Length: 130
Image (cartoon, rainbow, N blue to C red):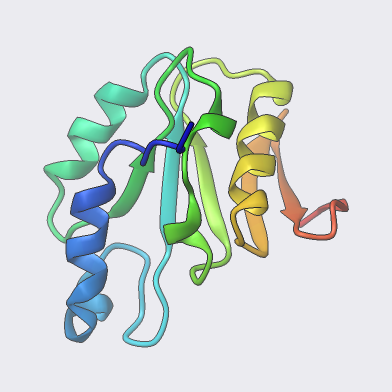
């Protein structure tokens, strides 16, 4: 069964295609972008807020209650580090599963706030405090 693209994928593709505007996006420079992945019980609320922001924020959604491994995260492969934003209470295990799925699809580094500290997940399966 082919993997599905995460919600807001088409929007992200369109924003990334306009490379001349990268420096105008939230948290980005003309040479590099910051892409966020929101997850947790309030992920849809956070996504609607982010979609309305000016300047735009580059993001995808891992829908609440869905297995992140069932999604195709390859669009994130060239945009390390990806930032995971928990919208509402999210277990460390759920964040680790999401990070593992993103890394599996080619991203080299994922950052997330876990238990009050920033944690770095890397493609070589090591984890260290950032």
